[in-house]
Image 1: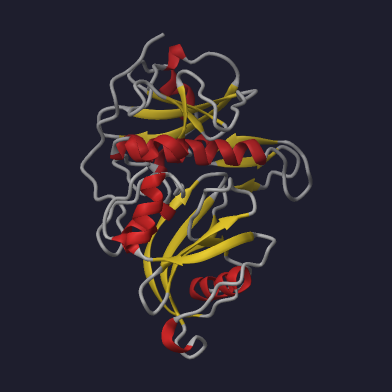
Image 2: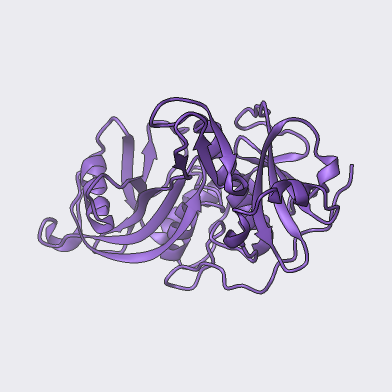
Length: 322
């Protein structure tokens, strides 16, 4: 097996929040080189070039070396059937992604040597490798779930270097979709932060609220609707914070700080009323209280790769334990 040096990439300005914090999966230093995607035989030529580096990806996981860098491989070291995608170049070499088929299965919470979930390691990767891994996971997730034409149901084949799928029956072309979702802090008049537990989470897990944007809905409307539906609170003013992809399987997380509506909640204080379906419990926390219960292990926050963690620490004013 041939393992290549880490991706260096070109200087780039990573995606940052409105208060200057870099977003873990919003970073990149690779030229996506979209103009070359329609070149006939591009994937085959790059696979024949020993300088090409390959990101191996499966089920939201990537091949890793020491845990803080990708295990980039030469094309001849990647065997077996699967889908190939052109990710771009850094001025010195090209990058491909390979998604083996059938994809390996990973048990949540378990460790598989040589593999890591992008959720767990995304924040540890360099800017270049974070961008490569995020694009690779997004494309592989899309292909895994979209093998048939949405018009007629026939099989599709990858075209445009893996960035599109063409129906073998009617010739229609289909592209990866990205679903926008809002994710937001909710802050009361005392600047306490609302954290909640989803019905799907372990007992100690807490995070900010989030939800998909509905058809015909603006982002700020989605923030206010989700908060009202999930915890029965009215949000007034909202501030945009930032956005990053979340390719599990294909979301764009758009982050906001939201503030309780002073007219609906006189004095800027209110008791959340969880809906009991999506949200089981929710409460407001001061900075001191949150630091204490996170430090003791009473509460577990989202991973550092997530924009949820960025939102929480933006409100807190620094890094929290865990």
